[in-house]
Length: 401
Image (cartoon, rainbow, N blue to C red):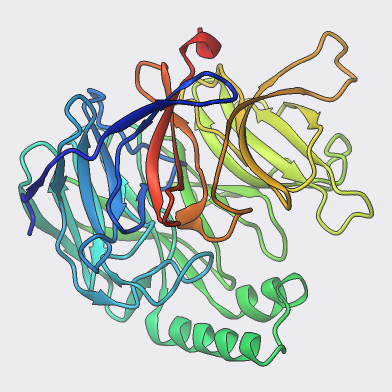
């Protein structure tokens, strides 16, 4: 129930390879993972970390007191098939997984439950219904608050159409007739019209910002009037839409003369610009670039990562410390990134922590690393001995300083 308190599950140990202090915050026989790392999981005062847990047999939100380790329950939803179907496990139950966001102003976490948008105040556990979803619609993408906290942006689709497309994809995949590399964009994404809306926090009213004839996911506020989305039609990348005018712009497309033919995969908004990784999809030789885009000028700079495999850009809100999650066939790791003296040379990487979870199996098993408010710890998700995702932090104060 909302407001229930659970005993700390803390344990600390030293990484045998790097000598860094590791703190394990959760240890229940269930998957535990923070909010999607593009936006904040930490309250403004840095006291609480908001996370998902499946410990009750339902996906719910909890708060973690970082000083004491005490855990408190923030939601009590019972929605069927509430997993993030596009990139994770569909057949979960509880609240809609991966789609919650934490308000920077009120300290409330917004989440989706059945046809409702609900909110819980993290410190007091006060719970309320904020608004009803538009009739017949279903939330399907990561969400975000505007920097001033006045707007909550979310992505939604026609529920019946979306579920039918998911069932079709699931059946065809089981029969070997759906290939992700070949069919994901044209056969799946392009068959699902999708809408971006914003909810006015003060009034609870909802208005549509843009509707497309294709599926997209991940919304972030670049500033109070500009939203950034993944992905443009038919490709990976990032595009923005102006809140007032509806003007759309594809930022740093892979066709740009300085883009190496690489398409942006993930990005985070920092105080120094938009940090991202860009990948040469379908190229003869795989390559991943780590970059920084200035939304004011359109200029960007990037360097080649000396890595094969999958990369997620780490999230430092200040934009001063570069780090990535890297997954390859033989390893899964957190890496600090630095720039060599020769600007033409590949970037330098340093292992912060080698992970136990394999490759990049599901979103709830991704590491999705981000920094603590005081910049001394890097939070991440990793497996425990039983193969459950747990929330950890590794000391990185020497690197961020």
